[in-house]
Amino acid sequence: MSRFLLSCGGTGGHLSPGIALAEGLAERGHEVTLVISRKKVDARLIEKYAPLHFVRLPGTGFSWRPSQMMRFAISHAAGFAASLSLVRRARPDAIVGFGGFTSIATVLAGRLCRVPVTLHESNRVPGLAVRTLGRLAQRVYLPLGVRIGGVRSSAIRNVGLPVRKEIQRLPAGSARESIGLDPHQRVLVVFGGSQGASPLNDWCRGKLDFLASQGIQVCCVTGLGKGGAETLELKSSTGEAVRAIYMPFCDHMAELLSAADLVVARAGAGTLAELVRCEAPAILIPYPQAASDHQRANALFFERQGGGIVVEQSALGSLHSEVMDVIFNDSLLRKFRGNLRRMDRANSLEFMLRDLESVASGGPGGTAAADPAPAGT
Image 1 (cartoon, helix red, strand yellow):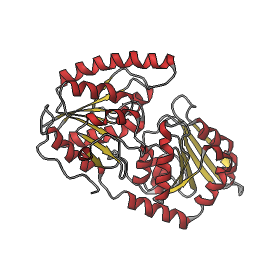
Image 2 (cartoon, rainbow, N blue to C red):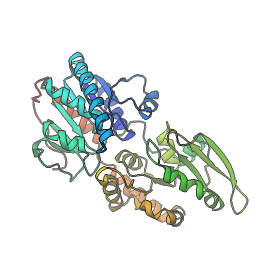
Image 3 (cartoon, rainbow, N blue to C red):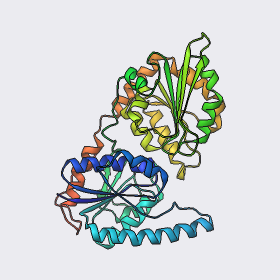
């Protein structure tokens, strides 16, 4: 048995794959501690994972604004002290950082204590934390075709994002019934990521009557603090009852995505991995302010692979036309789903589990007994 620290808090895009990896490691008999942030989204997401062990550490995201930079420095000093204490106490055989502000302190503390460090980047444009820390890592897991300057090629493994085992394609009818929708009507899911997206919420509210008139049911995940739970009963143009559901957070992503004929979503890597796993065609609206514009890069790759289409946030005024062009086009939807099925062939989780066991087998000195060949070569 080996001991692992997984630093994965701050957003659902970091925490969800961390949970997936933790469950896989635990099933193989390893001891796992997940290091998360003190943000509300982390606290909400971990509620259903009581068997896992979580530790909350201080820290805030980076900003160039002087007042925020000072807050960043102070919080990370506290986070580093807490991380150092945690690493010395837990004595892990390996540390995995999923990027974001929570990884910085844990990775640096691990290096100081001579613990092997690995990093996982799921976006097609690596984030600041992974770019900065990459040369310190024994492994850097990156999407296929992505590289980071200064990181030796022998450390890079091309691998996708680990997806929680509960995320699987389900029968559409039963999935719709489980969330309170009619199994026989079309369903549009609007999902702005773990923290929601106000522009997508506003678009959904503004077009709700139109969508209902076309017989399209809507389920919108608004995000914590962006509206309460609500169920509305509307009418189609032919007089049929059409339901719209709003929820601040969704604990059942497999049911939600499997219920959808079409999803309108942001383009975070975690969202895309779950869309692929659930074979849910999507219209992606990249977040324009995402660091290094990584969501646009993610979305364009998804579109090139044939999983859906991309609409810029500046073009939300025409989004309803795009929805209508896709959601009733059964031939196109089947094509998208077939492409999504093809995209899901690689077992990223299984590869990472085996590779991390190799890394951890070298002990605290960080020299693995035998490195597996880089994936995708």
